[in-house]
Image (tube, rainbow over all chains, first blue to last red; front, side, top):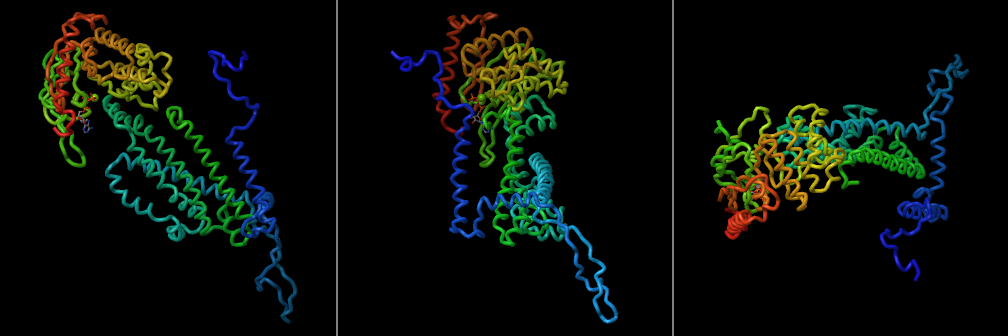
Length: 311
Length: 265
Ligand SMILES: Nc1ncnc2c1ncn2[C@@H]1O[C@H](COP(=O)(O)OP(=O)(O)OP(=O)(O)O)[C@@H](O)[C@H]1O
Ligand SMILES: [Mg+2]
């Protein structure tokens, strides 16, 4: 009788053999999908099936990426004066010479590192501001009933208005610049955070509140030991939703009025019919979103030690 | 002022729940009179939904009574009562140690000291080595033991216990019963204990109060004159069996009254 026909008693059934270092199925199939799509995408414009202005090819996007990442941030230009008064004319109205030709540096609006850095600054400041104020506001609304009654109608009204409709007003008040961008990002992100945190305060379980009351916990201790921990999952969810909205805010703000940033880069490339740059910008935006999402998931995982269900 | 020698005295306690949306009143308990002497172990048994938990929450101050008075003797050391809830009410975001120390934290004891004072109780309920685990890492029975330890750390004069052993397996339950009796006799605590298990009530108590179906009233106040300390074998003695049978008849009589099925009384 062969050993294979009889499973060994008391031993777990051995797992199917895998060669060491083999990637997980998830990675494997992800790669396969990529390897199918990429050549197809490359071929479509190359074979002339799709116009290059409609769909750029991966190789074109890669080369324009290299170009815009490595090109200098500023160009040297000779400034030819256009102003006639700066020229020297003799009495016979004869042109003699330009006195004021000098070299100047002009910014390279397509320089990607500086565009990314501008957007990242707007994003980080706007989102952090929205997170801090949103969480505090949400907690305050949840804890103080009268404050909620007072503020809720206004919140609902502003929340119901698309932020993009408020941008002209924001520009009127703050002008065009960093502050205006921050305000747009903040407005775009704060409500979802506030409303999620607010529902979190109500999610504290009665049995936990009763426990705290039964031990005669002070109001402050009831907040720190029950209400705050109960709303942590909601705070984190609110931050994750807010992070996405903040990215929308950056693009909205830059599309409407800006001279730098990833949103500007996409919009500018679109109006100059550079599909490769448009697609590159969109891809970078998506990667930006993924990186931020991953950072927040890292933070969330620190709270997983008592939230096994979400692991 | 409460009468000398009494730990707790309830007079004519009634309580109605009011439905927030319809405004309907639901009479949960009706004119309950109870006197519990200091150091007495009293159990309440009754059909499900008769208002046992409601009564305990009123005693604990978590619910207001609609009528009647409850007096509780004020001990010298301040802490008058602590409650063990029916379902595990441990905080999932705290470790076992922080959970057990929580009652002391509420009294303003500094964290270090509170945790030091919680340790012996963790040992007592057999959770040594699990101090830094979170509740989800514990079995239902272990959670309930941590629950009990949390109530005991504040050294309460009166222990209010709402079906504390319901989630335990038979063996652990008997161990915990013995442990509770030991603490009770050593520390001279008063215990008000709710259970569905008639034999548990008789085995533990000086008196068993049988409640009617909702609205809950005290049907009968049965004195348990079994000698102490009690061995487990006592559950098979004729006196024990006779009392259990009597209580069982009282409760099942309530169930046949059909009150349980109708939502309005
Ligand atoms: N928060 C509440 N709001 C409205 N009605 C309630 C509430 N809590 C309990 N009740 C009602 O009051 C009655 C008594 O409930 P209670 O929890 O005191 O029963 P119990 O005797 O502890 O039951 P069990 O043995 O099943 O735990 C029940 O009929 C229930 O429907
Ligand atoms: Mg109950």
